Length: 594
Image 1 (tube, rainbow, N blue to C red):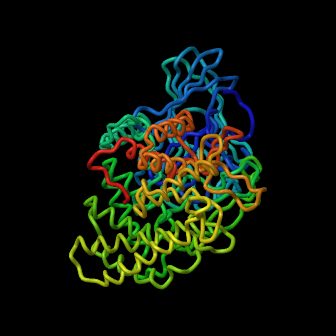
Image 2: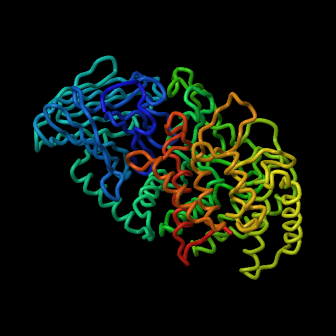
Image 3: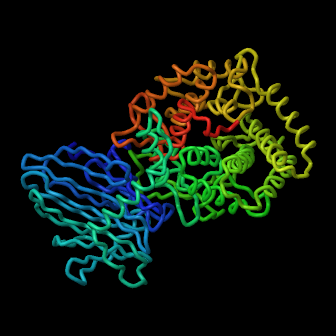
């Protein structure tokens, strides 16, 4: 690949991370996105959403080159090989698992001949806005300070300063390795300890290989499942157990459009999908931490439940815009925070109840408050289940009575009943059964359109929605029920474009969405449950081909431009891949949602 436009394509990025934050590295050797000290912090490299002047760390040959890359097997260590006329170099990029400080390590290794290299480090804190004060206090130490943060660059290469940017030119010959280590610390604390690059590489490789070895999936798609699970692990935040939906904000659903959202938060909606993927794959420690995070963030009042929270359970995530950033491919506005946190979404009560129930089925260590929480959720649900909501896609228009939302209210009751019956505990179970039956009857009566022979997006609609594929997955109706079979066929007919699914058809024709990748994986599961396994496998294989060269997926896919779109990498896409693989290659010990 040669130097080209300001922005690399989304599919041209790879992820490195330390399980508390993550960076995106392009095929051209540029780190264009990194938030320090954690996922939700202001970015210090924001070129992804602006220009190189908004911060990046470029490390590449000085002259024309081509690149190939891969992850080291079973790890999150990225290796990019640059080929030039004069030789080859391999750049190894990784972030050691977080100790006291966060580090990015870049090792330049000569493979063939001699290659002239360039390095440009433009640290720009506060989402690409703050130009730092640069210092060179010690040999091989270079500092960039702005406000609360300082980044320490340690390298034997001689570095020059100009206009708040560090740069260097150097050569690498065969067999030679030149290290660059960038460490973040608070500007008011002591200088962080030096990182031994070779030792850090060995320790990081050992960590990821040991983690991956805990996986129990041995099926046909082992490599693909493992890469998705490593990606999911990279999006976890171990201090709290939270898992962010993506490492980025404002990567657009449509290039040049306005559907640009901040996904660096934890969504309750993803709870059960995440829990099942982790438990079935054998990563029970992460599953337990996620379940405990869920219980903690809800607090003592079910009426206070939000659809999303910060990494530490923060409830206030106000949305604002960053006008100094031009946006990816001029897609404005660039947003931080997410106003959807204030929406009423009925389905999250079902997600919470289902997550607690599935954790119990999987023998995950439970918080003693979980049955009490079940009672609180159902008690509150009884007073709000008839209220219109904003739906699974967080629509910012008029609230409606969405079919999926009401089906998930049914799930909340169903899982509470099963949990209390299993434990032999006393409670208003008979009242719950009556309301469960009432909800089921209402959804089947008001949410099913006989002319379309399908469930519809909301009561009285003629509009379809891909979330309806989840009805058999959550056990609302069997996949072989004629109403579900009709729904699957209708969704295939009306929401399939270019072989993949859109989540729905927008009311406004000017709004063009990509194909939502998780929805297509849900179709894989629904087809398999409905007895159409060959069709399910065929679609699954097509979806796997949408992953980029290192196995990563974003939120959506643009079938016209043949490009990944939306925030990247997207946890829900990778979770859906894992769950679809388990559905296609089932084992008796695998847990399902029904």
